[in-house]
Length: 324
Image 1: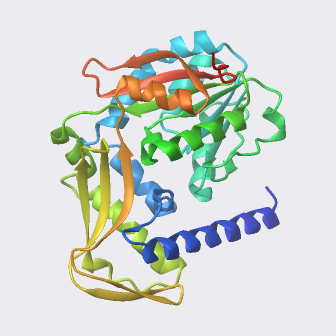
Image 2 (image 1 turned 90 degrees about the horizontal axis):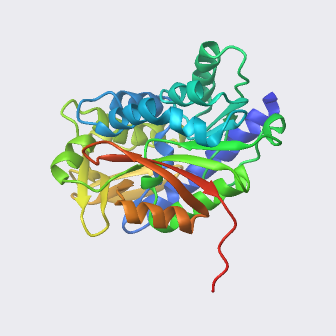
């Protein structure tokens, strides 16, 4: 990517970040989209979260990939371009790439520096495999590199990131992915299952405070990139299970009445008021299949662990059924 393209991309992302933060702090209740967690420091902290003993999703999903990637490879066949949405460190990706004989790997992520660092590391582990990183917000349709447009495609969306969106936005994202990958493409997606809050709450509020640091890092980013003076010590991290919506919610709660400036605008937050920063929806098997179908994907195979904590689902993009 040319330097001017990188500058244009950075400017567009900065404007979108500013718009979302100002709108979110002005709203009632206040909320900021979770995608803005992932500056370089936020990406590092999330990788640290995935290694915590309380955070089961990464551990269970990695084991599922190690066990079933061969089956994915047999169904998908060789020669596909693997397109990973929200690739992060690409830590789980080698299990898949080793099993399917891909023609290329395209990681897509919004955190450009972290993306390129991870892509370089993976390319060193897979010499001869074209690794083509794309810095983009995958929430909308992404223009894929010219070198892979003619290839059959396998989308990869691990980590139950789909759960960060409400069902309506999740359907929109799945449709955007179908548009990015094209008819006949396949998608391997990880989806977290509904389970006891006794398991869920510690996974999002760990004893070491890493998830709290990850949540609070959003305020550091706002101060740094949007000329903010938010008193970060006045906020605390909270994780809540919302049973009606089947989701974990993350909030930043003000512990005192405070006021601050962001991007030249003043905001006042009362003690006990929160900024809603993330949702993590959980799906039972039927709900997962319905979500995929609404997004234009037909489930083909599903794998889960013995305790039913997490599922990997392989789906195919097919034309919508004609109503009878």
